[in-house]
Length: 381
Image (cartoon, rainbow, N blue to C red; front, side, top):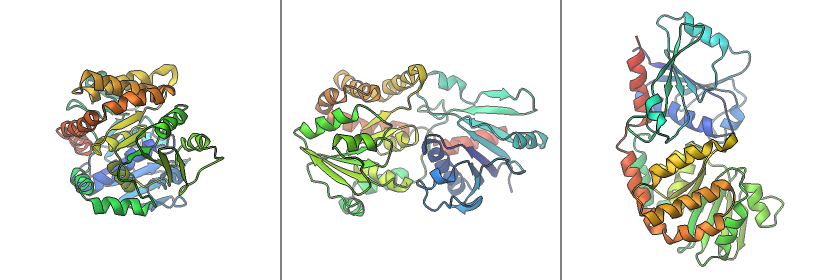
């Protein structure tokens, strides 16, 4: 077997879905497209299961889609390290595993997979080495991103072809909606609403209810759901529930496995997303999106949001770019979403076209999995 064919990916589940969503996609793609042997170490299999129903949270080891999934418990087992070790999002490797890495010859390639950012400094930091302070090991920082100077974005083979076939096939879309128990009105704006808790929910739903345009809002199970329920005066909403107020029709969806969530993004006219994994998948959907960025202390996330807006809005007219920025900022600030929605809608046609063109530009960059494989192969001694 060629050097570097065995990979270990470590992931701690943060905020339920984001980190495991990225690492699960990466692990599957490394197996399917690059012929690698991948172990995925996960500390919370119960939260992993909604993304991948085939996961049995009671098993310490199992194989799913060719990936060996291991429970990351304490104490950590004495496992022989792989040739390539991916530490996802600074999750900190177990000490006994680190010691075993240091004892190997040749030593593993160690990569810290960082969070996605559009900030300029990322390009200068991508790939930089960081020697361990005590052990004879070097960790390399790997930054996903939106330019050729970064590590790229996950984009599995055939994704664009499958998306375009789905979006051009009314029968496939009708089957998808029927499987969810939804029958969209032909003239309705179809919106998927996925996000963190947000006080702006009520005013946005109110604007949709009071508007002239019919809006079909699809809400997968998330932390946003209690606030949606409160808008309708309900004590709670569960998958399958439907509510209507004015021009707004709302359907509550179950938490969808990754392939089904992709189809939801493809089928909607506008997608509200949160975190990192759903942002990238919404970009590949070639539909307009609104990103609820993960809030950080001291508003540190705002620089990250503004950097992405500057990159994403390039190519829009000044009026449309302002409407986009104002609406995104209002959504992330938790106030003003209803007011800024009106102006956003005035520029919807231009924003729609822009979403498709922007994806065409992203496709010119190399897929992250392929780029990561090349990067690690170059470090194997």
